[in-house]
Each structure stands twice: as C-alpha cells, then as structure tokens.
Length: 353
Image 1 (cartoon, one colour):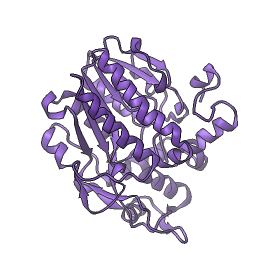
Image 2: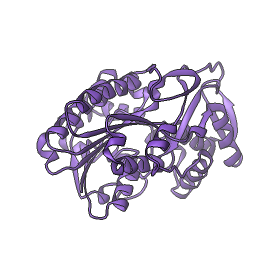
Image 3: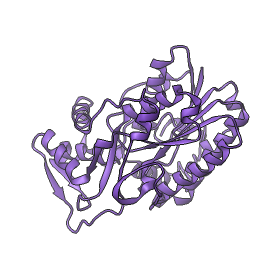
C-alpha cells in the first residue's frame, strides 16, 4: 500500500505517520509538506525518518506525477487555526479550500482509491442548544471554519463524479504532546501556562463549550476510516472524539490547575463569552466504524503534557513563541523568508524554518 500524507510535518503528522507505519508493515509513505513548521520538532528525526520519501512542496503546487501509484491520501495540509485565518484570510481559503479540492481532483484522476480529509468541528460555530450531529446546520464564524465547510461541499461534489472513496473527519479540538508541538491549542496552552507561570490563563469568561480529542486518537481515526468498508465511509462526514469529552473552557482550566502543582486559574479582566461555543455528538462514527476506539481522556492528556514538557525541558521562551503558529510566521515574514502569501522566498528556507 502506498499512502501520501500531506502536511506530515505539522502537529498531527508524527502521530498519523507513526500509526500508519505500525498498522501497515509493508506500506510506502510519502510525506508532502512545505516545511513551514519544521522548527517545531520536539523529538529528533520526526517525522521524516518515518516516511519513505519526503517531498518539500506547497500543497497549492501539487502535480499529477506525485500521485503515481498512490493508493490513499491522508490530507492534513492546512492553515490550522483561527488567528492565522484572521491574518491570512485569502491564503486560508486558497490552501484549506481550493488546494484541497485540487488535490482531491488530481488524486481521483490518478486512480487513488481513498481520500481522507482532516476537517473540523469548528464549523458548528455557535451552537448551544445541544450536542451537534453531522446533519445539523453549520454556523462557521471564522475564515478557518468557512474554509473547511467550503472544502467539504466541494469534496461531496467530487465524490459524486468519481469512484474514489472520500471521507471528511470533523475533529474536535486537538490536544496532547506531539513530535511537532503546537501551543496555540487550548489544552496545550493551559498546561504550558500553568507550568511556566503558575497561572492557567483564561482569556474568555470560561463559558464556551469545546470538544477535545488527543492527537493519538486523531491518528487512530484515520486508520479506522482507511480500513473501513467503502459503503460505510464513502461521501460521509464524521464528528471525531468522545461525546462525553465536551467541556466548558473554565472546567478544563480547573482540571489543569488540579494536576499541575502550584498553579491556579486566572481569568483575564473584562473577558467575555467567546462566540465559538459548541458541543458535538460523536455517536455516528462509533456506530459506523466501531474499530475506532479513543484511548485518551482529557485528564490523561493533561498528565501526558505536563510530564512531556518537563521531560523535554521546554522553557518559558519556547512556550511564548517557538510553538505558536502566528508568531512564528510573522517572524519569517519580518525576516523576508516568507511572502504575504506564505510562500518561501528562497528554496533553502523550506528546510531551515
């Protein structure tokens, strides 16, 4: 089996590639990444040593020759959060929406059998009336969420015109330690703040709801869908997580404070309710693909992050800038290494982010 993983050098990449390698002993894995967050490495050699071929290419520039003999595409490549979407709204649409559809079209024309898209539950936006199911109305409030909605709509159209099995996985908010770390995620940030400052800093009033899922369980979801019978997952979207792992932000903050010694919860003065508030029901995936069994709880994720941050000796400086997407990209632009469309100005930059 030959599997292409786009965005393999991002936060999810190490876990996804590692699980693919463990499950498919004889598979060939091709990594495709622009290297924008190559600096986020926390463990040497991840994930490049796990892929058979690493292609440094912007997902907007993929060509049919790259898909020769590929059986499945795991599409992770994206502008990955709301602050980045605000600063780079047009680029977010280009990459998350238009490049996703172009990638799927090339894959289908090249004979790829499966295409699994990393979507997001953020497309539910503000939805406080109950846990959202996949058939409920969408209410995207940000450029990032709108790009995911547009990509799913386009993928459904493509799925009606091709035999390629297309599946959208709407992930809960990711958390947990990774070989390529991100700290602009609520739980990862809370634990980093608690460890480095003694404060779990909550910028809102803490009332918004968020579903959470560990990065390792995200990888398990990709595996389960890739192995599921075609008729169960073709042209389907699934909420991914645990239905019982929906929490209000303030409750997550207090869980962190209970686990990280000497820390306390602090609310920002004047912090109001965040309009991005939603819960999700994950029963569809559990009923359709029972092979997917999440193993992490939020509490276990907090404990893992706390231990990993200390083991790897991450510093307050690391927490403040190194692993925060928008701050890193701004630095690269200020240094003239990236342009405003997030394209490298020199070929060598892609390997030296």
